[in-house]
Image 1 (cartoon, helix red, strand yellow):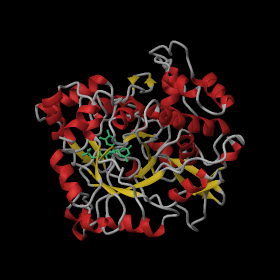
Image 2 (cartoon, rainbow, N blue to C red):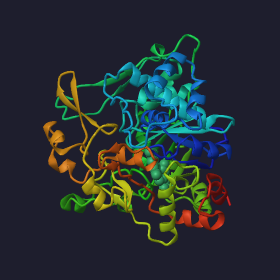
Image 3 (cartoon, protein in one colour):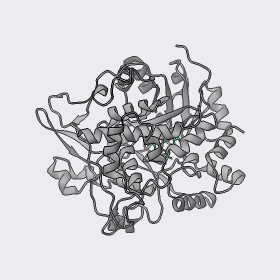
Amino acid sequence: MNYTNSLPKIIQGGMGIGVSSWRLAKVVSQHNQMGVVSGTAIDSVVARRLQLGDPDGSIRRALEHFPFPQMVENILNRYYIPGGKAPNEPFKLIPIHSVNMHRLSVELAIIANFVEVYLSKEGHDGIVGINYLEKIQLPTLPSIFGAMLAGIDYILMGAGIPLLIPGIIDKLSALKPVELRLSVEDNPSNENFYTYFNPKQYCDSKIKELKRPKFLAIVSSDIVAKTLVKKASGIVDGFIVEGYIAGGHNAPPRRTEKASSTNIQKFSERDIPNIPKIAELNRPFWLAGGYASPQKLKEALSQGASGIQVGTAFAFCKESSIVPSIKQKIINKCLDGSLDVYTDFKASPTGYPFKMVRLEGTMTDPKMQQIRKRICDLGYLRRLYFIKTSEVGYRCPAEPVDHYLRKGGTIEETLEKQCLCNGLMATIGLGQVRDYGIEPPIITSGEDYSPIINIVKQAGEDYSAKDVIEYLSS
Ligand SMILES: Cc1cc2nc3c(=O)[nH]c(=O)nc-3n(C[C@H](O)[C@H](O)[C@H](O)COP(=O)(O)O)c2cc1C
């Protein structure tokens, strides 16, 4: 395979929900590295930013460049509030995704992904990627299409094995109809369920084809990487190889016999990715999870990697969307060595391990856990389950327990589950207003926060993404 040597050495990892927004990705790309926006729940993010009045006009500026004005008008009419909503008013919700999505939901997914990518690419020629989670399937097809309409350069996908996505990207670039097979639980005869998207129903004949972005799969083992090379529906252009100390979700630990008998989950040597085996696959790859230092970058290059992907160091920089007061608390804790990051094997409704930061006033605070009432009104992590032929239901183990049980779920699955959708929205200042106050935030970070200490020493607590890049390249 012929790869250009213009690959970036540093990829700023996609961080959802909205942590790596266009502002962060743009700065990274302007400094000749790859900025990555997060496509996770971006339709709710854009709808809520519009309800805050789009104060700097950026969303409306991007929308002026969206090729189909009628779609824009519908979205602005529904969500834009000039001057912003009152602080104690709840956000208007967007419709929860389902297999047969309403046209307006599809249009919002297209538009929101377009906006985020358009703004991240505005005014420079740097490369930009967008990150999606394989586990969230329902909005994927229109989301990718929206990002492609804005000329996205790379699509990165983790939290699952995205075998079907490369072929979907090929078809979308030729404006052909696409389908995605859905995972459905409790599906005794393995009946197939699909979500469909036909780009021609959403664009006019002005557009003949779209640039095919490159596709990078985020993997944690050479076995998954090899499977993707052999079995994916199209070309996988490279890999992000992520170890288990990385922020966000991690791949589940491989079961040892002892762990299976005790039912205790923990990571071990067996979960460390085999880099030489990945290198044998002859595709570009970047190492992630505790690689944010000049020494680790050199080490990665010497192992045949094209570079590194970094999350945590960027998550708390000036341009990330985490609310400034949370950033400051985290940086203070990094500096005095008291930041408590742990792997929570139960919290995420995806069933994957998730890195959590223990912090007062957030969902890890027992006080907040008592105050918060379970609700599922964003629904991105709802799982599909089989009801009868041609009919599925939707359930999330973090929803109210009685609802979950009524839908055939078990009590064990609900234990210690956190609502990542609402919690992560709150972390970027878009938390829903409830009768008890605002939804408590959920903070994730990598286990290795030493890069933050090193960068703050050089550039101060208000460091920027540019300082992160300069530190890593030094
Ligand atoms: C706040 C935060 C949110 C993250 N969210 C995502 C995400 O939505 N999707 C994803 O693939 N990775 C996500 N990650 C992982 C990063 O993209 C990156 O691979 C990882 O942070 C690299 O390891 P490091 O944290 O040691 O730098 C997230 C990481 C952080 C710190």
